[in-house]
Length: 516
Image (cartoon, rainbow, N blue to C red; front, top):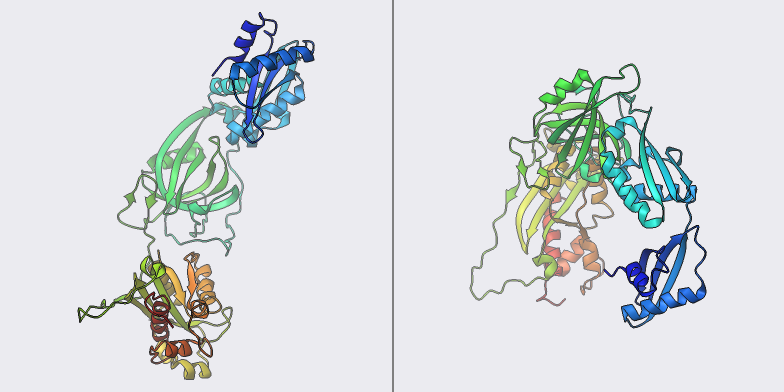
């Protein structure tokens, strides 16, 4: 880049050798280039004639179309301005230090053009920093903004990070947070961690008392000398490592006492951990997990795959529903024409499901049966079907409608296990069904929330597809639509049969070779 000040001094025989280039901004819409210079506070203001001379020179020097505007800004060494710019430096470049920085931590004084800056930092935090690097970066930042001889000192104050953080032994579990279960293998630090961690990938902001679980990676140890309290002069250890689950990865920090140092040393790479701690912005400017309690957890799987980005974990879950593979359709006659489908069918895997329940209210009633089929690129390939145990007897009128009796549910799996299997089976699929948004999904989501999972699949309600199609019928009940399309619905009000019929409806409505 052209050294503008050097060019100006050469052109005007060093008449403006006190100038300092600040920035240049080009507004292409207004065809305006604005160049800003600093000049010392103890120098007289630049006359309009001098400003015009410099502006004309830069216009010729740049040889650009459009207008050149030159601005001159006096470099006042005001303490409040300098402190404000220092805070801005930490916001832009050292976000991890912001929790330990305030206006009271920074002082600035000046004599003439000499500016002395002092920054007070927590002694434990300061021990983890390269002070020369910090001072060098801050100096470069301020030197660009001021004409001054700047001196920076880092002062370690008497404050320290707490050795132990008081917290409740039992943490409340929010039903709105997506969670999963792990098994505790061994207590290492602290007591009473509820084995219901949330997913690391869901952590988006600072948060207190967070339960997380995952694989330990890249463990490192640093030491520093405590300078306050009853253990002043003692060496203390700081452990950093990454915690990885199937959804993401987070950097972790644990300030370790002598009591637990052996435990931390013995933790092996790829150990499964369950932890409690606070999510705060760390010294690296990223969200960091400051751990207070730590248990060893049972592994989810015997084998763990590392894809360089994150560890993929298979959650341990005993399956209760057997998936049936359905025979793919074959062409018995070379002259038969296969149905042609639109991109929605051709490019997606779709799960079509239906429920039978003990009533209409998702808050008070229970699921008795779930039936579903999977459509893969235009063909029905798999079947999912299961009864579910209910806590309350099925009302008589519901038994008469669905032909599902209480005796049929004896020995059936719990709905929580069935829904977990259904959740796994739906992975990567669009979910569909008939009027599922207003009914079936409400039941499914209620159970899912209770066990700490969340269905985030795209949902396509087949009743809406029918209503927006060219099909014309007296109403859009499933039986009516099935009949209008020339299909067959056998044994209605049984989950699998309704799901299969709905799948056929969905396929027919998405054919491109058929006009209704």
